[in-house]
Length: 92
Length: 385
Image (tube, rainbow over all chains, first blue to last red; front, side, top):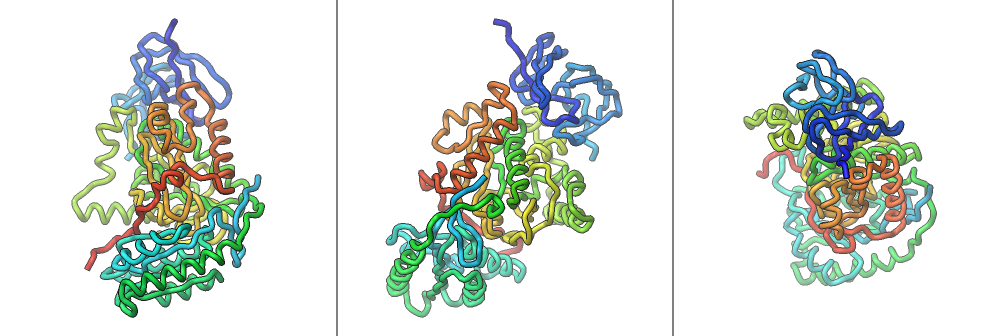
């Protein structure tokens, strides 16, 4: 059986989702949001609990989770890309 | 939505019906343990404070002792003092009496161990008879004050249990209830977000200053709380920034407006959502909302925190499937299907709300069933002199 990645969107304003399991590069992720589910393709290996981008986030743009700003993108981020300390920095 | 509780003389409603035996100072603990060990149905609130504090801490301890006694889960109170402690047993007695519930006091230095125990046992038996007269009746959720806490957290806390509890407490507030959360250490990095949710600029300023004040104190000891977060373990778990980490914790506080910032152990003046100045450690944190009148606690955990509280049921909510199966004897609400089956946070919140109503109406929590509910303390900020 083909493994399915799964991620959850915690607020409707969010531009990232959080992985509910591990996903490998190239695999599909089923994204669960308040308004139903949709699919995106993982561009990297993304572990459980880590974030995946739901759309293109440009360098300098804010990353939003829980409906709030959790930091700023320090690189351009593609849809389906792993979002973590390598491309996201705190605003403090 | 209604629950069945015990109405007190002053109109407040308890979800339990205890006789509380409260030492006014840690030196009275032996006597309190002996009394409560000899009579079924009473609860000891053993702690280690009450003497040799700086004045502001002494004030906090008195506020907590009064708040414990006035908590609506408590039908009647026996205070046990040593006699020479810094806390004024008379003041505590008078303040609890204002709630119109029966209060008695005994002092060890006037009687000695054996006689105090004997008198204490007699008094508690008499108070238990009085407590038995209270019967459960129906009340709506506006009579509930609930404390919220997370402990032994992991990645699942920020994804499943905390968001689900946040949804549930939004519903409780919509139904007229009162909710207290706190743990100022957990707010660092997200205080600007909480401040935006304050009802007034005054409350907003108070949220920011409580964080600043804590950071200043800790920095004076050479520790930078902001700089050391997220920890390497947090980063491995997927947390990228301090904002994200703190948001994952404060999401359990839901999304409603913040009505005020409470001192540790202070009672809210109206319904709605409050932040209490309080530490993260369980034994001291839980005392804060309970002394502030909370009848119950919603407590999320990832790895598995077992503790309850002597006079208030603590409902454990967990989103980690492994913990839920391995530690099922400690977990009251399993919300791990958010992770394993993609169940919505809203659906999980409904289950939490159902549990709140049934526990408020008398269903025992896992911690109550085991009796994992004896260790408490009072948050002291200054030195012990």
